[in-house]
Image (tube, rainbow, N blue to C red):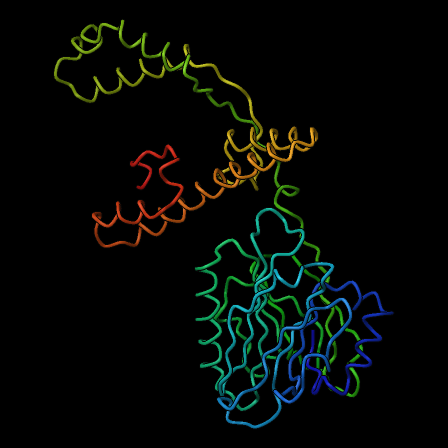
Amino acid sequence: MGNVRSLANKIDELAALTRYQPEYRTSSVLLFTETWLTSLIPDSTVALDNFHLLRADRTENSGKRKGGGLAVFVNIRWCMPRHCTVKMKLCNRDIELLAVGMRPFYLPREFTRVIIIAVYVPPSANADTASETLLSVTSRLQTQHPQALFLISGDFNHAPPSAALPTYTQYVTCPTRDNKTLDLFYANTKEAYTASCLPPLGRADHNILHLLPVYKPVVHRQPVVPRTVKRWTAESEEALRDCFNTTVWTELCDPHGEDINAITDCVTDYINFCCENTVPTRRVRCFTNSKPWVTPDIKALLKEKKRAFKSEDREELRRVQKELRRKIHGPADVLSCLVHLCFLPCDHQLCPIINHLPSFKHLHVPLFSVS
């Protein structure tokens, strides 16, 4: 990443770097500010082999006719072009912004996607307005994608957004122009990157920054937690029902008279005692990055899909995949709906929203889980 001060006249050098220099060739993303590109310069003029270009040229809303501009090159060996989408473009007198969402081939399981926000703050911009705009855009995208990895990078000049983004970590520690650090890189996770400087591109006056990932996934940082869970089957439920039917409840409640607290404790302890003696248990390993909707039914379908694949039964594989997709998307949709319900002013809006979920009728979700 870096400020290149005109990209079109440096594209030949950049093409050579992406072909022969491993720092450029193996980079997942190349991000440049002040590209000085206009609508008269087509994408083919600044295209790079094995990289997908997304750009945001300066518009008339900036109050200037030339300069500015942002460009993001995504390595197609890291993320397919059809999995790269422009989330937002913004250009005014105080800030230029390009937000790109990506679904690469591999991500740590705790992240659902990567959202990169390229930023350029002109020297004449209002620092407070630029920071507020960046905070507003970032907050809106985080609300839409709460489990995404957010990377904010660009030339901020006199308006570093550290105060506006207190939960983000800034990773650039080396000077990027003379003895000043104007180009910054923020991420919403700690201990994720190390920064080093590379020579400027062409005759640009900003150094190029090379961010190397050092992030360790949560599954490698935190141990596996063994837990004991109950196996609720039809047989265990029937045995527990028989146990309760043969119980003389008056013998449990009469000794406590009208003391409701004592009766509650006694009945609760008895129910727990019956469950422990009737319902079988098993030991499971809980990983820190496990998703809440990965249920035993989904795990069984995944095993069934493997068996269908090995047997080369295409019809069975198609059927299992369809069922697996329904099982996975159903709980995820319900969880999103329940989070949305927390912000509704009235409880009577519950049923219409749930009825609009196509997979809710196939799920066994108790209504008390809404709380």
